Image (cartoon, rainbow, N blue to C red; front, side):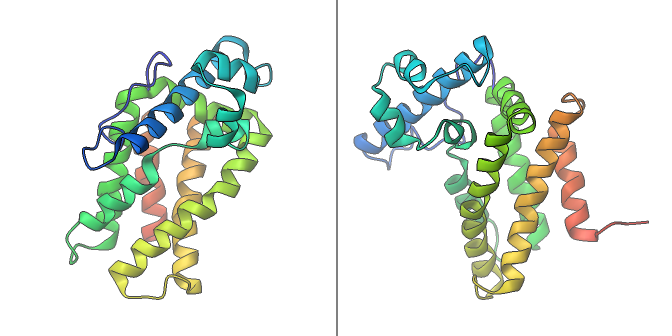
Length: 210
């Protein structure tokens, strides 16, 4: 995540050949809105940044911004990674241990995300700590990612995606990743985020070891 230009990452579906022109344009519009938002937030702060300013910077109308993102907080927390992570999970060998699969996919997602736009990753996690509305909206959005993860877990294990066990497991993972991001920001982004995620995965796999 670099100088707030948010170049499309290899993990993004924007340039996938199977997507039609209309879908690619939608993704590029979302990227333009996010790029404008992060640039403005860096320049003047989150609270001072308005939807009208974002629209002007992204060269779209305010109604277009709201069509893609219902709230300003959604611009900060939304990315294109969820469906791609799902594809990666489903592409792993069916007989591979589940935690091995999760660690591989999380490592790959972090590698692509931080490599392409590390500054935005740092700013996003900082806003989660500093802006209650962003953190609250992030927690609300976790249910969407959790539902997707429930489907992936169910496909791998043969369990009911609506079962309590699958839902608890999926949300434990999502919550752990969110806490790792908050911890990273609270500690001044010291160390590697990937190392914190590995520690979070260790807790999920082994619990609180002595």
